[in-house]
Image (cartoon, rainbow, N blue to C red; front, side, top):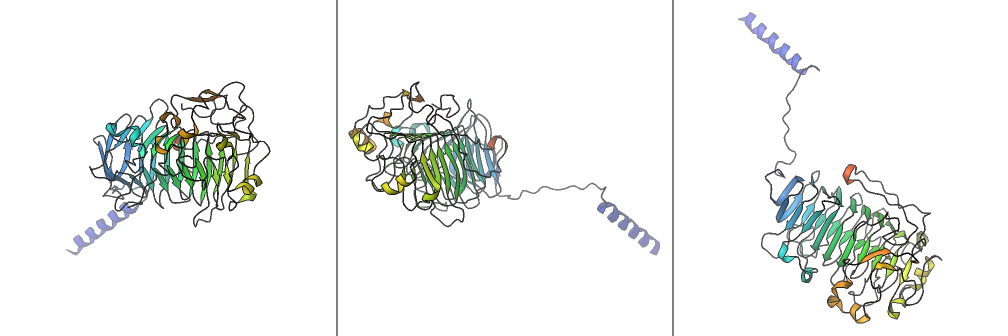
Length: 444
């Protein structure tokens, strides 16, 4: 009996040594980190709750409620996908609540569509706020939109969501470490701000923004801790500002935004009064620059408030055009003349009403009366949409060759790679979003 016991002991010890040796093969059971998260697979058609995974090319998915992407997880959308934000039949539209990453990776031939049911896609619903868009948090790693159309966003947030009981922005981020890449995309209809970054690393290039904000709200309303570039975008029919850098907030990173080679038209008139900007507006400690932009028939010119970081702002090589005297009178905004003039360079094309027509290929720049601009929600439809117009430059345009190219985009450190990586755009000598060498905006 003692011999048997000793033999068993030897066998046990030998097995233990073998199991612990470097040459042994062990079986690892891969338990998911978040077992309560649904992994999207080939059978998935409805999106709701905590999810991760890939929306497969060319398929249509329906959001039946809020979709939550947990920290450390991601949803990737392949080309040609349509996501319909239908909701659960209640009054509050669904949203993507992003604690991890959201990457919509369409292509020019197969864009992604983020929308509402077909019967709700009407001009009358452009400010209805039918769904909540993309709502980030302090843990959001990345939001990427490439060749994506997103429309009809806003509306009140539901219980337990980041903006519960408050109007949602189309996109909202809350960390100065969140990476946001928005390229070659198209946005239509938003109840308030389309995108409010409260911190983040931005690369927003070659996009079209149509009819944003009901009676207020900006296209991109930047807050403190946000660094990046906004370039080669077309904005038409914004309620207030196209781009508003501010350093509001508690981040130790100063807002620094490069705004260059954009075209902004017909904006600012749905916001009552003259206490806001209308196209590009620096304020409250922000720094940055605005070069090579075309601003046409906006309520006011580029505006820089006296509480901005005036020693680190330059506004130059921009073209201002106004059909009506009331527009030209506010090229240098009346409530911020001294501070705006302090950062205004000598190469801006600023004249009287009717001076410096940029000569767009297909757009009657003088077609709308002041009554049309001041009609609020009753503004003519054609005033606020890009189609069927062509905002490229005719030969002989004063915008051709009037730009500045001896500056670099604001430097931003991105970790995104592959299809999600940002495209850093260099400035063009031609003003606006459509340089004559076709290096800029590819939409419209």
